[in-house]
Length: 104
Ligand SMILES: [Zn+2]
Ligand SMILES: [Zn+2]
Image 1 (cartoon, rainbow, N blue to C red):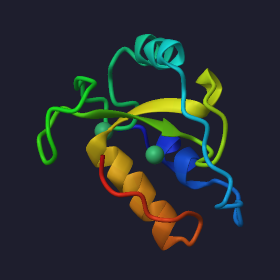
Image 2: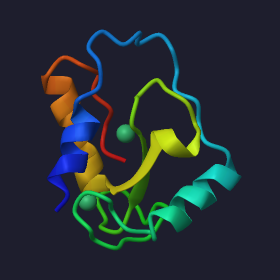
Image 3: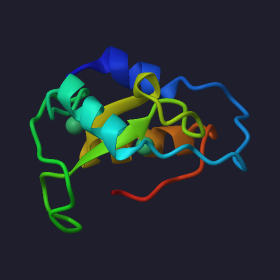
């Protein structure tokens, strides 16, 4: 369990412009993130599979933007599982830093 990364992911600046959309990573960048992170959730360390096995099913890895409205480049992206992803966004939401993004 990497609490340092969790702390980093929820310590985004206050007052980000919510009207600015995040830039989606290209297919190539997504592939590089997957290789760099060894298809493993970088917070809880569990190895899951990418893709969407279906809502509510285990095994979904998400690519999270460290700065939610930031770039789609490698250094702004991190692999986390859907459970950690949901937790990060719930914490961002409850601290008023970012709108809630449903589990995915
Ligand atoms: Zn996880
Ligand atoms: Zn996210």
